[in-house]
Length: 470
Picture 1: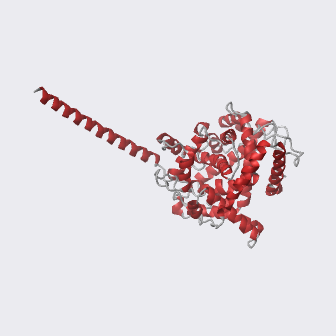
Picture 2: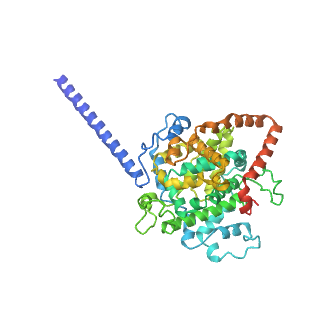
Picture 3: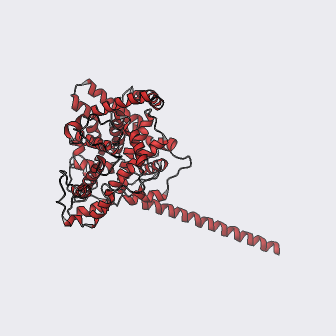
């Protein structure tokens, strides 16, 4: 009798256990589906496995992420929630018709933009709560900022001028053109298609300004007061961060209102997903130039360029890598990025970027006009039949294909050279020179002289068109 009861009890326990397991399984499946539905609430977002065969994702996962890495639901939610947030402070000023760049610089530096005593900031602007908060943000460095670490990063970032612009145009920018959420705002303004050289050089000028440091050779600019530190208050990097933040805000507001229409006739209406009146579709794209996309841009200029330098043979230490990220953390903070959203170290940056790239809808057709405008620059400058121009274009395309991947190169219709891996010939050369620099002061001085001369030559457009570099 007892045996029968024990058997019955055992069966009941097993049934209960099986029921509980099935219940837990259904709950887990429900939670997973809910998370998927939640993070795919914008049309721009795809399933996390849709791009698993993308070369750049395979490389990041294989070489740069922990072996046990899996995409975090919390990080997914953080990235997706950032689509709906622009720059709250700057957006409040724009909503009230206030352009803050010049008044902000005047209020903080005590002079107006012509270096006269400041008398032209209205009470309406100076007392605006958003302006007051922004003034406090730009008046001093935040407590977390380490000037010495930032300078270490700036010196490493600026050490390789040719590769810096190579990687800016052929990795940081070209990689972003495969993502329509990043490409469409650029196409709508029209600038990168019709004024590709000025826009490229202005972007180049910004990364030079951010990485300007006291040890740079100022012999060619004796009239310029040497800066006291990296991203010092009042420095060119500080000024340009304010100006770029205002430009982003104005573009964001005009896109939301449907006032920027340069994509019409270039990109099909269906691909733009705009509303019937031509205004920006936030349900599909999120807010233009939002928190998440600004962080992606931050990583394009810091993490991707740093990785490209290493792949091409540069010896960048872990401290220098930390310094580069720290440098751009301050620049991004000044441009309106929420500091709490920025990944905290290099591994976290790769986890963030991998997650972001995994869920972006790709549309190479949308990025092709931008890619073509950038790719065609050398022959536009040197002449259509110029052999050197064609060679430079092939080298640029080879950098993109080698570092970013052939799939993105094919998607953007970049040419494919039979000798494209020739760009990797720089690896042993740069590695050898960098090693010699670290161990021989005379070599280090000679290389610095070469760097300064090369940098000055590469600034030819800025020296003709930008007051700061003239």
